Image (cartoon, rainbow, N blue to C red; front, top):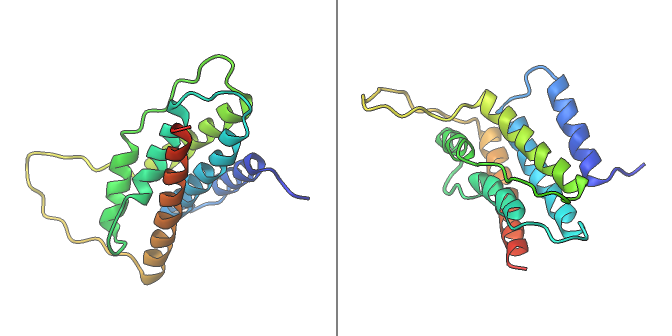
Length: 162
């Protein structure tokens, strides 16, 4: 049986929530998958969608996809900082339920990620911290997620211009 994109996303989020130790990369992957699923849903809504919807999807994906250079742990902090600034769109009356559901899924995925990876707190006092490091496999995973998120962000931005 083939599941529609929204059902796959909901199933993945449920599975992730049910597993103990659903870490940074699992929640980051959830964000990428939910934003990927949002593109065809928005495209097939059949009614005009306010620009804030694809702009939000683009911004969330952009937090991940805009990271450059060799993937590293500092980028996880940068992603957290960026995601903490994303304000979910206000959906007008008449927004198709499937669009409202996918936006809710994105909001939930971002919240889950930020619960596990809070945005860095900036203070005036300098702190001495040791550099964070990613394992080689985590570096590859982050690179793949960044690439996918960059594509989602570009696709969502293209929807705004329509």
